[in-house]
Image (tube, rainbow, N blue to C red; front, side, top):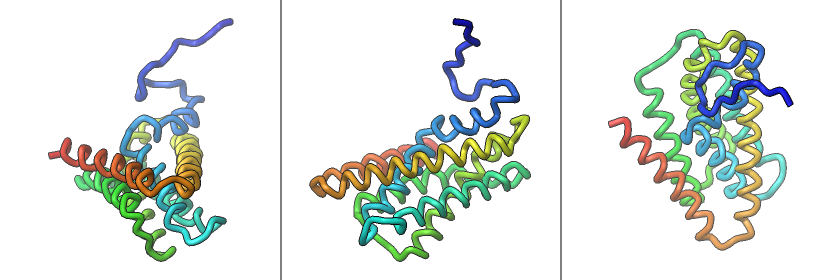
Length: 185
């Protein structure tokens, strides 16, 4: 019956022992990261020739390169193109879902991995103030995998629905990416 104070807004300071929780919640705080991570899982699933472990290669590439980008961000690596690239990745992933454009596994991994580095740089810069950045990155990795798996589940569901449903999902993600880009201008 005893509770701690409620925190209704992301970005508020949590206690240092909650670094994992900060990282766990961090990818959910921005629509750009949330949509990109869901879209990676969705795109990987709808363009795979068959269901199975192959649909996880793109999401795993994204998650691992996100961690690399976050580690670089913690070290102070940054660029003025980070936010435009994050927004562009949402637009590009939305267009890939919309068109159902598949590419080879290697190309897919390079593409989503490249996008992930920029997402990671953004996250790493934001998490640099965390008292335990490695715990925060572990939490971020966990949520990223969960979001990718949600995208995979959505993709499996959309395989059994009319084509317009997949195209609508892609259009929503692409429109969000375009809106994010316009906000940066």
